[in-house]
Image 1 (cartoon, rainbow over the protein chains, first blue to last red):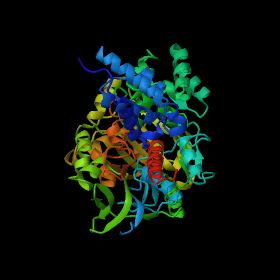
Image 2 (image 1 turned 30 degrees about the vertical axis):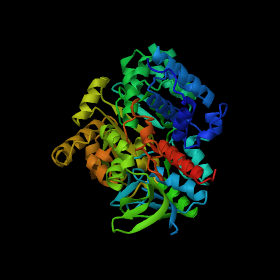
Image 3 (image 1 turned 135 degrees about the vertical axis):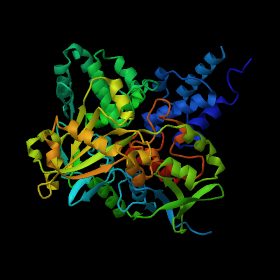
Image 4 (image 1 turned 45 degrees about the vertical axis):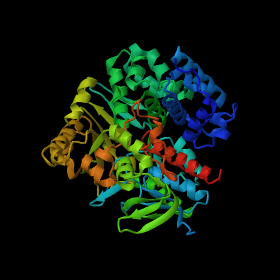
Length: 87
Length: 475
């Protein structure tokens, strides 16, 4: 059976998002607001979503995109999608 | 170690390249823009024939209201916009087989216009327009997977109304509403149609010149009429450009603000780290091109004050017919714009300047060299008579630009007027992000994963500058 959550999920996700927004992974603290603190706009929000979907081979529902406002939320959305995928 | 001649070299002086250059120069980076044409602006340019001014592809600007995105960039860059624009209201007029509908700066008035002609959809019109104008980004983001047509169908049942709203998107995104991303459609309505009508005094070139002059005032350097042949790469990093005459100019960063095929198949050909992008580009679809007929006419346009606005003519309500007809270049939709009506200082020797333009596929040189060019020109003149009576009798100057002309002017793939097609699948694709897998090579403009149009490419230019400034530790 496929493994539900990769061991290094947090690091991988940080790297994926950091690549899209041109930041260092260390800058992505759980509570750091993507929009207010990291200058993410609506287009980058879509780009982050697509990058996450491709990397983890998951589908993020459109209603979930606005929820991805910080790294903690991004982790939550990815974990849920991975769980759903492996059910 | 040899010092770089520049911090950043930008290839292409379109609006994306110019805005990017201005932000970099403002932050103190030594920045060079290399442009193949003899003047800056890319598609945002004007030309003169027999003294008459014609705006080539961009005919009006938008998003210059107090809190508009383009206005924000001008303010931040210290570009004075006061007394630089004629502001026309209504900004856009749609001419259908039955009536004319105005887009006003006052959204309530625009809503009332649509409600007047479509009383059966009164409530939906109010909800739709307010959603497009004011909804929080979070709600617009939820439209990511939808096409504009799918979104429209969620609101409206009247097919005539849907056709009108769709043709505006076709004209402004270069893609049928059945293919264009709903997210992009929302921004076109919000940024362009609800805040349009800004015409730079002296012609559209004046805006590009304003940016180019500001770039130079901030310490930037522009070299015009100079073709880039290659991007120099050493130790896995972009480190300058090689010009057509073989001269190498070194830099720490390179920004390509030109056609994506040029960037990846010519300038950086053979670079292994970019193979993935090249594969992507091979399957990516470009937007449609544009056919433009520029006319010098003797009819006094004071008689047709509506031409201060962009006029969008729709000859049929059958949207499928509109899509099929454009494939065969027998278009059922087109736009009429006039630079001399928008700015009376451009009226030269009593000759008015108008442009009739419409979306077309690229086809090829032999197609446009044949009868097709004149046939489409005649068709547009004939159809314009609903708006300009006896137009053909007043023509004293006629110039045609086909997709081949657009290609030759910009080297944009297949003469695409709006870069990549903004479909839900292509828009936002991380593979065409501004930061490329090759270190120190960045992209900007409408051949990235962002949207097209002047405001969007300006936004993209700003974004690319921010990425570089962050790498430089300047933010």
